[in-house]
Length: 489
Image (cartoon, rainbow, N blue to C red; front, side, top):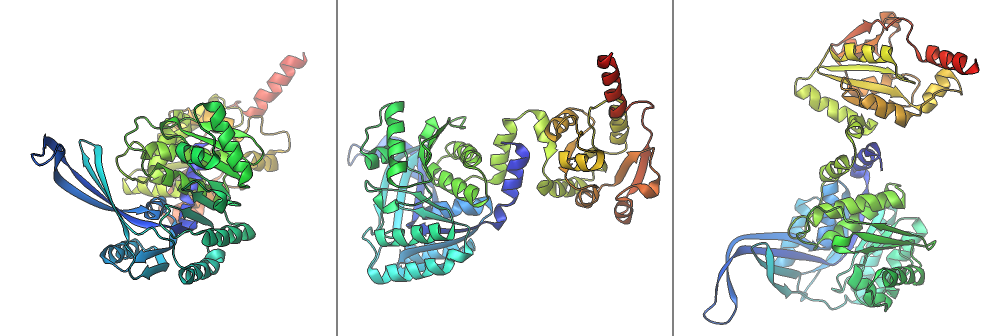
């Protein structure tokens, strides 16, 4: 997946409206040292040094979505107890929509306490109620879900078998999502997956898939058998089988498969990685990415999370850093339209003088190189606006360009004198100039100042136009003519 496409996707996440339905809980972490054995019993004594309280269960899904920049609402139930009030307050502080959260007297809000020493989990203590919610509570939940269906882009179901996602609630929300064309992605639990039938996507791990399919998974053949069986029987678009440090496998409705190795450099803790995968698949599908693109980004994000201790989240910047490291230097210079304005604003704040020029640069030659080197010397960084293939065809005819926009962008990005390459599709770079807001606008010496597109924009912002003379006799047209003459002879 191109870096620019990843940038565009990440920059659009603020517009994604996500509805999370499932079991809310608190995850408590007690961090300490274990240097001695208790005199009371043959157990280690943990000297607690630090305490951390986080949103867990469906709350970790919410945390992941918020870290990505999405708008989030939640539908669930809480106990009318101290932990319930604390959890509700945390959600409000995060500006999560909680109109769909019911408070039930006599119910215990889930809290899972983990004791860790030397980065190892030694003990977990659970306090919770797990009985299914009653019909009247289902009615309230279903009514809220129906109201929200037209105001959401993706529904994420986080099932921890704590009683919120009953068979009736699941049937209503999956059917409503299908009818409205909204992706419904599910993190499933238990042995009976029939209740998830018709969902867009499920994300079980290996153990869960084995339990639900009845297929003992002990090699690649049995893993594929279980994956295809679940996808077919549950009428899914895709089953995503997460495999911890081994990556993930996708089984699609058309019986095709995709297998992705983990992106993690080191694996410290796989807890919470499933929530991250769920979220990335949800927002990827809601954003219109292909399944393969979504899977790639979900795998990258999971690789980041398993390198952290405890249920964790991943930021857009962390995803982008991994993507950058997987691409050569030229890709890092090629920027999307969605992010270039932000990058240039940051450059201005650092006091850097921005130079901008544009062109087709079809068959790079020495005239181009000398021109770009002179332009770069006028400031601290050079942004090159590159005509897209379609804009060149409109300007120069159907036989051009000779090299496509991706090739041209990478060739130009390999030049030391160029700091950023941005492809634009309009006939002129005027809108791109407005986004970049350069201090200096450069064009060739064959232009008169008043002919330069964007001159008024740059000068009104305190900048100026510079004209640079091209090397005589050097042009793409001349190169083409020479090639034709040589090989015709």
